[in-house]
Image (tube, rainbow, N blue to C red; front, side):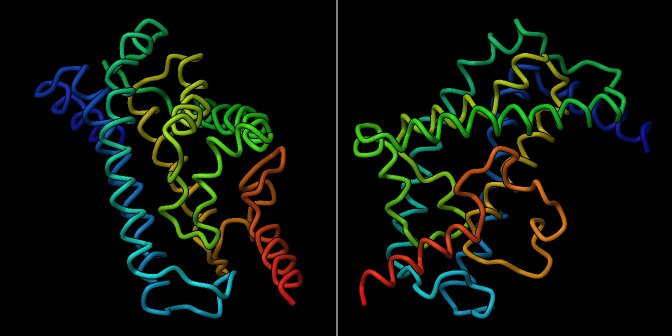
Length: 239
């Protein structure tokens, strides 16, 4: 298995430069993981599937969903991609590498666990700051335009917040200078976590049922029970 992986990696690095792999490939991996994992909850909501597992009774219209997707594509191409490209020298300076040998699995696991803890810490305090009066009004309110979330709304945000979220995600890798393969794995896992947390559904197989600390060690609004409580509170106000 390890030999096959290293052989595949060698072929990849022989055909593409490290710059191409660290920028364009990282962006494409993020996009693939994001849209492939986020589209199911959009389709579930649009066609009324798995309604009994939906956390909120309300649903977004197709037009509102399409608006989100189009803006996400715009933000990703105009904000995310340039940031990935221009941050490459900094990552390279901090020790990012793509050469063989590939890191041992224990190194990969320990680094990714560190990234999850650090990202959650940075996200928690940054999220609290975003809920202060001025930042919420001018920045974070964009993310809350979709009061009934679906997976793709996880990255629907003001460009300034996109930059902050990007910082929270990459600060761990920037500090440790990982192998590019580790960085790719971290990007995919982080995307899957945030998309699932914003999916708007809670299934019997949802990770939070099996991982007590899933969705935040320090406590954030990612917890589906808090979302449900907020919905019930809003419903009581309307009565």
